Image (cartoon, rainbow, N blue to C red; front, side, top):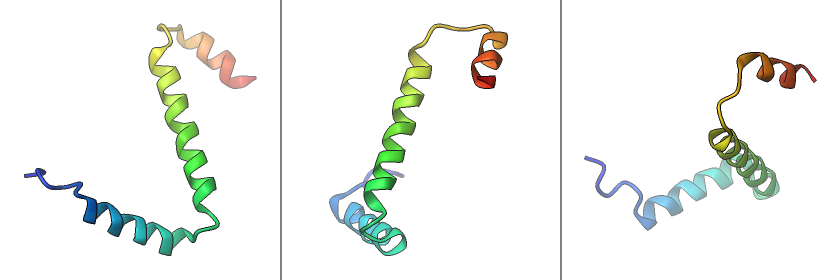
Length: 61
């Protein structure tokens, strides 16, 4: 069903649509924010389990 989903031509079309929507000036910001989100997600996945109270204190700071 999803065998040929991400072929090079599809990726070029997606990149073209992104360029049209966001413009070339916003692409570095967009890439940076996506990278930070992925990095934060990976850090949270690798941390040992914490108590919910510790998370609430950390968020409140």
